[in-house]
Picture 1 (tube, helix red, strand yellow):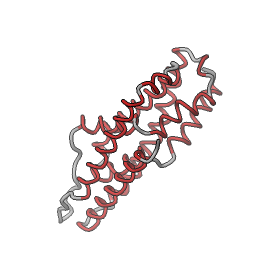
Picture 2 (cartoon, helix red, strand yellow):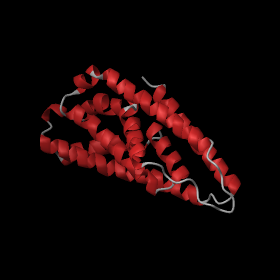
Picture 3 (cartoon, helix red, strand yellow):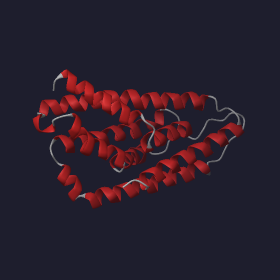
Picture 4 (cartoon, helix red, strand yellow):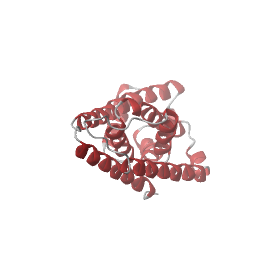
Length: 204
């Protein structure tokens, strides 16, 4: 891959991934609710999901993606259901007084599969790689080395974007000291998570 093509891809991905969407909303809500450390499995799954869509596009497997549309549809609704479950858990989370810590993260494996469901079931991500990417890069000329370069570029861009969102959420979390502030944070996180689920469910 020539540098110009990689830069164009990086710029397009930066705009697409940096704009608030279901993935960003779920990430921010989770950080505010559980803290920074607990979201790493979620983040890893988001990045792996995007790598899968990139690979499908590069290796000409868009037809396969369409063929297994039902599988991705099931995954999408599974992700929606789990996000709604997380929203309910956040909304009903007990609030401790005297500056006790916010609820901690649950199972890393559950967080990973939640992130994977969000990424693979997000039509915004799918459309970027299967519909928009071919207009940016001549995918028929991409070699295995080119795919590796695109994947590395994708990872760098996503790490910068997602960690920026996560760190911003961490700063907001640090302001939450009182019982009332913690309750408000839980409710906002729950509403944000439910909004992310609704955004994914409402897109075809």
